[in-house]
Image (cartoon, rainbow, N blue to C red):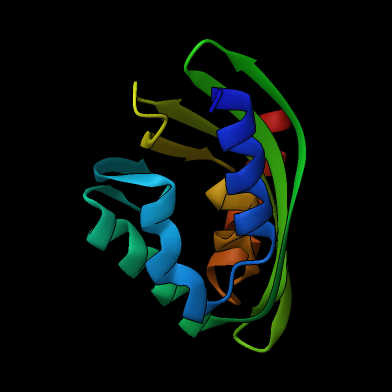
Length: 140
């Protein structure tokens, strides 16, 4: 199987992922995967799985869609959009992920890039207005 085909299968898996499907990550991800996002930097399939479980426990009505992607050898970059409800309010996150595949065509690195300040912290009642204020001050 090629990296591109493996990615396409993984993307379809992510777009249809439910909390019950998380144990099936092992079909795509190596046991010693390195997972990184703005809040986590963990090693191991179990730790990555726990992050996904936590997401489904805290965010309801999740929809995840994969957009355009590019491959270069064993590396794939793709953009995505996650929608759901966090703390009872709509939450929309846009990001880019970098995947690195090993020779067995398993994912050994899954790194997510997204702006936690504008897409997460600014949603909180006290912290949000403060961050937006600083963002405006810096941009002027």
